[in-house]
Image (cartoon, rainbow, N blue to C red; front, side, top):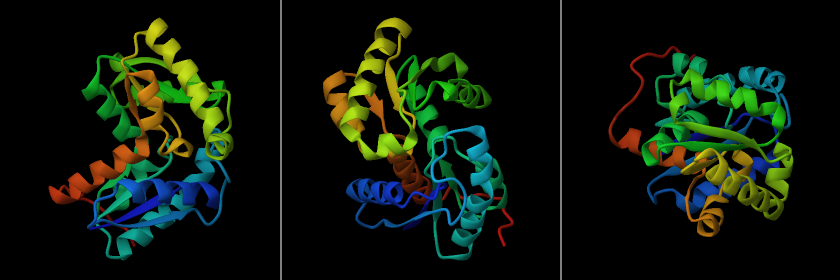
Length: 226
């Protein structure tokens, strides 16, 4: 199968990071094309950045539909333009945020999201509420790091996740931790081994869900990509 992975920002280093981590876990028969937006924000740190990222993301969704691809992944935890992308696509479009919320709800009574900056806490809560999963949300906790920092400094990021995840478990009742940024792709196994609770890498979750949806032939019945 062929899966088209879109990094909605313009960061080539983050795109390479996502490619490396997904290549480690993809099935042997899965072919990945990982691309970033051709214009727009270098990282997505705000609602304004999300809005700027939507047009180039939808351009890439159209490109994937014109190619011989079986599914599309939006590799940004904010899922910019996800509903519009589904509307115009003839193949499944999986947002890493949406998919990780549902997976976390299946794995524990409550989940906590590790987001980048405190200014993004409300947006992440709102994202969960829109999906009707607010009763599964224990908390959203800030790492006080930029998106670029989560990608460029893995050790610092993992240390901050461990600190906040422990607090989420002890103070908020979290049973599952979601790494709320594609810049943290690949960090979950090490954090999970130290934390001793389930930690989800949303990019990995989305890939495995995409592979399953293709196998089950769960394509979109609507779509008008052109």
